[in-house]
Image (cartoon, rainbow, N blue to C red; front, side, top):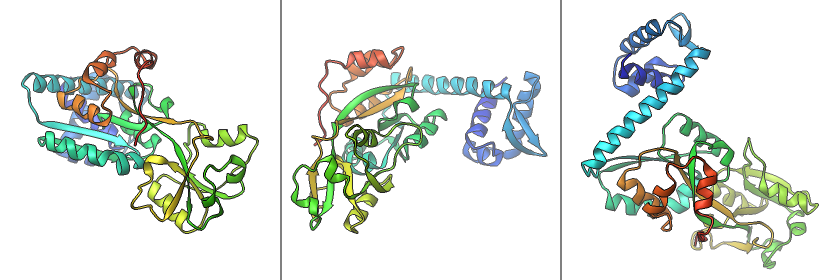
Length: 325
């Protein structure tokens, strides 16, 4: 069994069993990948893949277990290479970040600009997606850091560090009746069509829960993942927007009216996560501190090898998490 065979195996799994795509990602030939997979199966004594002709159609039950262990081995090889670079004090490498639209559009631009200025030799890769899509990237070891809000049940293997807090706000056109109301009530909101973020496919909606506890039924007319799309539909008069306050730009959104919803909705916490046991480079610690200054290298190192999220939460129990301004 050879290391490159395990790398080929993981790449094929990550490319939906498409050997041609895996070979391209590995900068090698398709026949070479096929040959090495066959040699690996022969050595193991069982099939990792079910085939139809030359095509791989699914992974066998034993194959799933082999791929999971191969991922761990390939990940540890990456950690060893990272350790060697860290000991050599290299300022080069790559950093892959998965996040949602709101973080990518409104929070990360100044952070990434500053990071690039300080570490020009580090290649940055920014991936945008829903919580479910990001969880899939994590499962396939395609990202170093996740920055998201909620969805904790999707990321059981990550160390999740609290970055900052934010609140929901009500956003309406200037001519809307609620524009004259500084702090709309749930009953008032329920009288109008609502436009807000798409609900998670796998978890409960905190927004709907708040209405339900108050005995109100919201008329959710439209949902979207993209804050900018939501604001365009608000401008079009399709409903009242309920957005994250960090997604409202005072200059670009000056035509809209923003009203407080702090008396209705509890604040949310955006977190930064990485796989438990990962080897973080010096520039990785710097990136974390740029996102959230209270996440110092000392604090991150104190929890990076924690047994579970409970230990992380205990470490930060007395730390005041700031609101994003």
